[in-house]
Image (cartoon, rainbow, N blue to C red; front, side, top):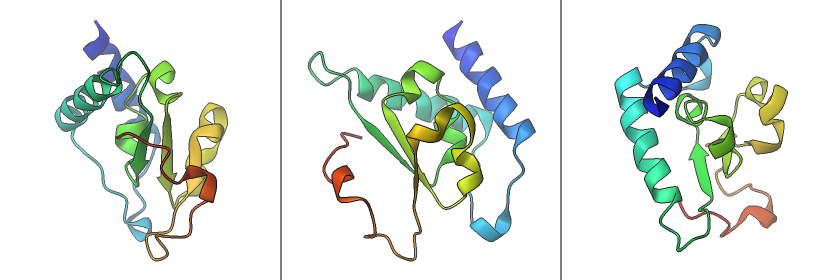
Length: 113
């Protein structure tokens, strides 16, 4: 059931979001998203009773493939500011791979995965 729900969210993200080649976004197949998200979810539960924090670096298709509850433990670092709209605005941080060390200092050493 959960895999089906995640596949539907991932399909919805792909259908509603156009790839912008100028932003060098990388999109994964539905199967790849499913496998990688399963690994992320497993990693999130391995932190001795505490929930792990996950950083998604320029991988919006993976981030949005997680369910909303799991995304609360995650931050999407991405150049495309349009991804910061809506309910995920607090889980978005602008990230420019041309200036990779320019991050808010409060985010340093805050992630487990």
